[in-house]
Length: 151
Image (spheres, rainbow, N blue to C red):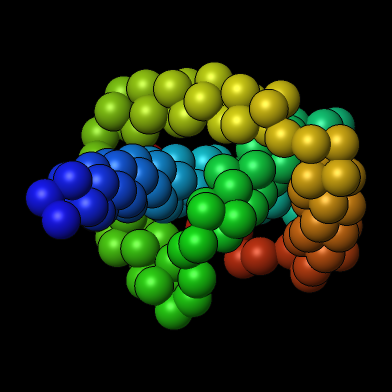
């Protein structure tokens, strides 16, 4: 009986460790998605204001964000919690200095590229398809008023 209790305790400890790792991943995904989304929207504003040649960079940022978000989804994160985490990360980052934002985005791009590279070919296809669709939708929007995004 004691052996069975130890096995159950070990299993719950492993499950708790996995839950903790997933929670840390969810938070990092939200933080990174929020930071990259800021840059993504800034690129959209520039493109809609007439700056040519931004689609490749916009597509890259969108793919990397979707890789993080998609992996969090596969690990079990769902809305409304996922959306709430993204909103909270976005709100927290609003007051950050540009250097802190730039450093986070640089780290997140490296991490998200690894997440993308580690994905299956089917997962990559889904991310690529969704990212292309999102970028097409962004670039077909009407041009915003002259204010634009800045940090």
